[in-house]
Length: 519
Image (cartoon, rainbow, N blue to C red; front, side, top):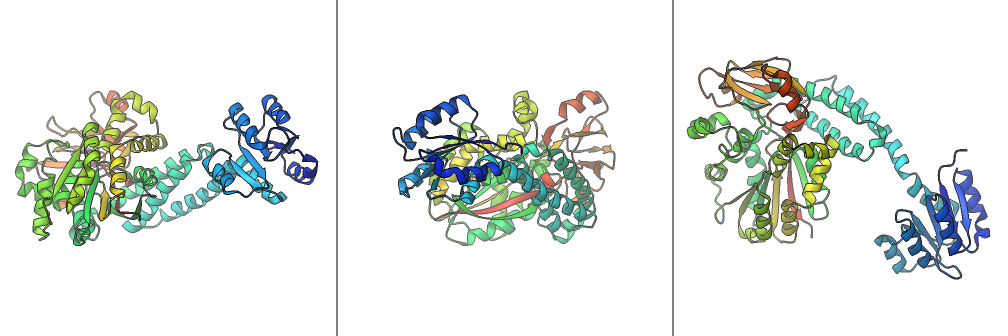
């Protein structure tokens, strides 16, 4: 039988443990023994040992002292204390990490085996179970794609995919990431067809909550209470990124999560203005023509009026706040720290809006700075980068500070997600055509219909006309637009970058979370 691992059992009465040792050997473990501290230390010094079972009470140097010396020698060596004591202090030592676990005498063989498996085989066992469960769900998703799906079913399917993304992040050794990516691409292909077919009907019938309906459906009902409401809009936040952040907030907040669908194009000037105004871009063009005639499609020139747009929306809905609306936009880290330091003072407001642009900056920064692409070369690493940023961010600091307050409620969402663009498609247009990689508008702008939705009548999509001859194209799946001039140069430059503006599950299916501090 192949040896699974080597265990050192240290006990001054080791001869009484022969039945246990024989049982573990029959299970495939190599068992070494020592009757005192010196022999145990010598064995660990000269032999590879994977786990130590250490008696607490031994003549001479006892188990606690031996434990300290073992950890000095090898800090990551798991040590399980075997003791007759049931003192609370020993349990606290185990919880605090001074010992990895403990067993109380008299031990039985199955109890010992369970502990051994926990330390020596847990990852392998979990990996096998994860692989089995994933293959089952993989087949379920493949079967689901063979039939027409409604938007609620697409949301369920996407949340399942994202849950598996996070699960497989913990088990890279399974080698299932490429399988997952292939299925995600298949899903986005089908989802793009679905959106192309259904989107205009969603607008006409108001059958799906799109960006202009977010405030009405999710924020305004929260204003009826006497609580201080904070509305956080995190630019360019994907569902997987939120789930990574959510893990750190679960002990602080009770949460209720639902979803909405971003409007097209899934880009900040369109989607976020639609959220704050409750209007589609064509309606905004009519009411605020200067916004569309002079602005460029960026966060600075076309998203200057978010506070005013929200105030107008509240006015139309006859919502009267107890005091003035407070609006904060966090772009720079230093300003974010100032907001974090003062966030408690905003709890006196009826409604405080906080727009956070840092996640969007992570996406763009990964494209602009090679070091970030090296740190986050794939989706799993991008989630890890998000996690590292969030743990030390002013945003997390704000959430921790608000969790300590009474009478606070948070509504959190995003304006759009992003997709990792891996395939280029040639686009034709004149010099006046917009420069975005996932959507464009201009005179007779066009691309392969298999990879882009072409909109010749913007009014049907509630988009600004921008001129009589202007049409739009919106990229599907993970495609991005490249002009024929210097095609290979720009194809390579933008390949493997996170972009937004197009049609994909990652960009369009977005979380809305209502959070209240736990008490």
